[in-house]
Each structure stands twice: as structure tokens, then as C-alpha cells.
Amino acid sequence: MTDYRNYTYRSSLAPYMGGLVSEKRKLGFIYNVQAYNLKRFDDYWIAHGYDDAAITVERVNEWLCCLPSEGKSSQQGRVSTLRSLAFYMNTLGIQAYVPLIRIGDDHPVIHILSDDEIRELFLVIDGYYPEAPAAVFLRMADEYPVIFRFYYCCGMRNNEACSLKTSDVDLENGILMIKEGKNHKDRLVYLPEDLRLLAGKYFSHLKRTLGFEPVWFFPGRNPANHVSKTQIDKKFEAFWNATPYSKSCDRKPTPHCLRHTFVVNRINQWILEGADVNVMLPYLSKYLGHRDPDESFYYYHIVSEAFRIIEQKDTVAASVIPEVRRR
Image (cartoon, rainbow, N blue to C red; front, side, top):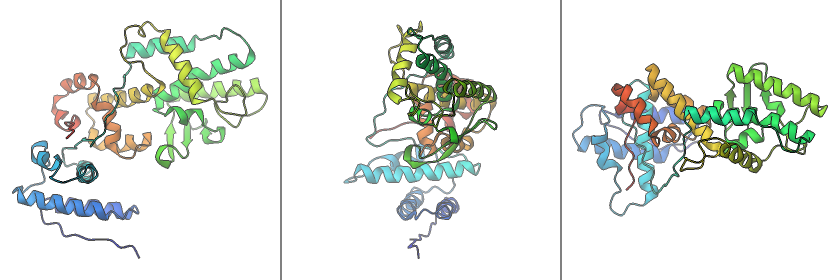
């Protein structure tokens, strides 16, 4: 029998706290530590005299700070629990501030490619012809336009595309099965129709070239193995250096930047269309194979392009661009 620890919540947030705990436990999580942190936040809410469910940055500012004699792990646990509560409330249509604080976590600045940079990059990739026109290099040249579009159009990780098995690709329906991705997550990735057709043409040609159906959707020079992440990194660097933007870019991009760019473009599209990002973000998080939605949103939060979009849709700014703190 599972040893659940149950707490009584008394604040105006009580229904949502209870609902969150119930949902998590239905999914198989014990959620005892988080339930206790919710109880602490429940007491905090009452102690501050808040009699409604409006979670704002001003009201939780004190909660986000490190307490005396508190370690980073404990502080992160409190913040993470509040983040989960805020996301849960947002899915119910109740606007709540989502804190994106990462305790002791320093993220590298990622280069998000502009539309012009993307256009030039794929012109180079699509026009690539190997210096040594051996059969194996010509075959690899056919892989690059597809695999790099998997990163940019589907937000896949480098290693996920490299190690994609043919048996996990449904070209008829345009569905990729990612098995044992990061954090041991399985998920489905859906191809846009034009990319589905391109991938189909590529794979038909690949089978004719090899004379058999390979185990790997993107085989390496030795078709018994998949193309390596290191090889893709090197080819991306060469392709990027061939664009006119490589000389003026202060942060050298990598294939993973295409995944980040996918996230930024998708959230920008939702904002411009007037969609509720707080509702949509959990779905994007699942699609990307992230642990939680704020991991996905951090991609967006760090780029200046986000603020240009936000200025056009200022009515959603409060919920879309939360403040980032490190203490």
C-alpha cells in the first residue's frame, strides 16, 4: 500500500492544491514532498492575508528567496512546487505567475537563428556536393537536407535524429517514434507534410542506393551504423561557415540551436495568433521530451526576439514573460 502523506489546505488556493496533488497521484507519483511544500505555501498565503487565488510576481517574491539556513536543494524544491501549481492553475484557465528561477543553474546563451540565417543555411545544405564524389559521400550528402530539417522543423535533439531506426519511422502517416530519449522518455514526433514527402523521397532513394532497407534511417559511412553526432556537428559547422552570416555572428551555433529556434518560432506563432501560451506550453513540453514546461519556456525567455513579439501582443506579456531570478 502506498504511503501517501495527506495535508489539509486552508487558503483560497486550497482547491487547486488539492487538485494538483490528486492529479499527480493518479499519474502514479507519490508526491509527498511536494504536498508538504504546498502546505508550506498554503500557510504562507494565509500569513500574508491573501484571500483570492491571484498568484502574482509581487505576492510570491518573498517565497522565491532563499530562507535562512536553507540549502539550494530545498529552495529549488519549494520553487518547483509553486511552478507546478501555477502551471496547473493556468491549464484550468486561471492566470498564475510561473516562476522560472533555476537555483545555481547557469545556462549558456544560445544563438537563435533568424529567418534570413535559416534561409541561407539551408541553401548551403541543399546545394552541398562533396569534393570527393565517391558513392558513400554522395549518399551522405542526400541525408543532410533531411536530418537538419528534422532538427529545425520538429525540434529533435541531435542524437535522437542520428540514432533513429527505420522501424520507428512511419512515413505513410508522418510519425516518428523516439524511444528512450533524454530522461528515458518515449514520445511521438509528427512531420509537416512537406517534410514527410521529402523524407519519403530520400528514403526510397537510400534503399535503391544501398540495395537493401537499412536498420538506421540515417546510416553512417558504414551503413551498419547510424551517422554519428560528431559527424553531424562537424558538417553543421562547415555549412554554417559557408553562410554570409558566420563572420558577423558572435555566438557560433550548433545543430541544437535549430531545436531552440523551433521552440522560439512555435511560441511566437502562438502569441501572434492570440493562443494561450500557458495552456499550449505543456503540450509543447511533451512533444520536445522535456521534464516540465518551464524547461521548454526557458528556450524562449532568453532571446531578445521574444520581446519584439511581446510588444506586439502586450496584453499577454504578464503571463508569457515571467521574471527570471537567481539568488
